[in-house]
Length: 483
Ligand SMILES: Nc1nc2c(ncn2[C@@H]2O[C@H](COP(=O)(O)OP(=O)(O)OP(=O)(O)O)[C@@H](O)[C@H]2O)c(=O)[nH]1
Ligand SMILES: [Mg+2]
Image (cartoon, rainbow, N blue to C red; front, side, top):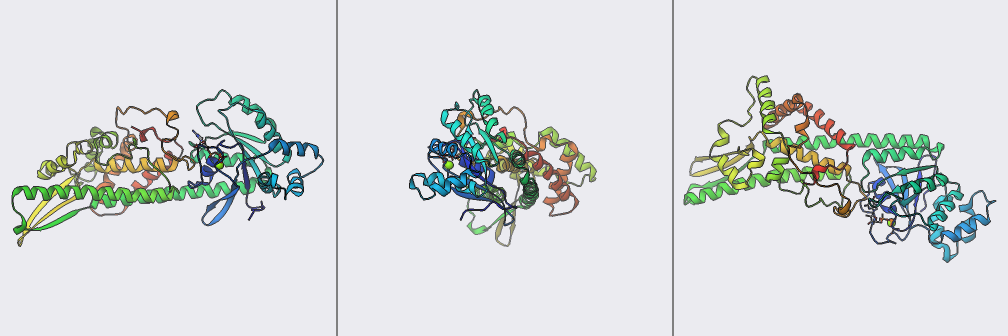
């Protein structure tokens, strides 16, 4: 069952005290959110291998471990056998069957088989004698080794002392926060592993290239999901056909119209949810709770979402006018007569949606009477702000999926250290920060999508969206996520 460190696959055993954050580091580096992590010490009880698999190919293996049980005994033995070339192997040869050392042997076995070592320490705690024992014993193994300073709190006064001590026994020392590490930081860590053993350089270069390639593929797929969401949302329509005989009072017709508006909004919510699920799977999140106060947890049609995302009315007017003028005024922005008709009033009243809509309806409600039936229909969306809000929100979701590390379980676990919530004083949507040329291009894409047309506008939008996603990959988990 043990993985042999071969020429092609780097294998790294993660060592460290109980509760230092070992499993969190493995979960984040392998993008595996199913690894058991808990605030209680002693969660991991045996060593387990976690491969990094891309396109069905294992490119690297991390071994999560419970940490040493008897570090001082092992160090003593190592010091007494200093003449051995392979201390881990020699220790196993002598104590391999000793039940007293079974845990420690399980830890040393991968090391004896050629695995490198990553020691994870909690940099917020003072260094103790036991830490120095472990550092020395790992040094004596002679294996390539890196230390990770994982700061579990905001206490950083012990960090310089850790740096000094670790530098003496490790080939590389890096700060790495398993809860906040972004994609870029993960790649930087892999890059740093190259320095601990030159022989790994070619394979790690290949691993990093595979990583980067896979990330680009995810961005590409996510942009595809977003384009499809916009296309589906902008052509979405609901219809109810009711026999005229069944229609009694005007109140009844009003009730039908309200139900129609609700069904229309629900349909759009569902489209957003479907897109989210695909994006989430794309970034390998399975167990993931959104913070309850996140903008992403609020209703799509809530005022909070409407106010925080999308273009300001001014920018919207500029982009819309420019796009309309470019197309000889042929682009229907939906701000004409439709906005203030009966449908507008119903739309606004039913959803409390003035925030998102800027006073205009989401879509027109149309009622046609033919051959004894009344046909109530709503859609497609005509409100010009809505697509920007929807796009901003799905981009925000991508930012979360890309930057939320897999080692971070509950959304509120480290609430005391969380970035303070930022007051939302102005529009903060990503699209609001785009150049007016890009905003205009998006207006054209929305108009084309609404008309069911593919082509150059869609391709241009795809390029803009991919650019935004690439920028977001390097970011912190966005403060915009928490209102
Ligand atoms: N704030 C913060 N907490 C962290 C970080 N990394 C780990 N933790 C928390 O520290 C606790 C222990 O994390 P684990 O990853 O289970 O630690 P471990 O070393 O595998 O623990 P054992 O398996 O018990 O030896 C959990 O509550 C984690 O959420 C971090 O970077 N920041
Ligand atoms: Mg663990």
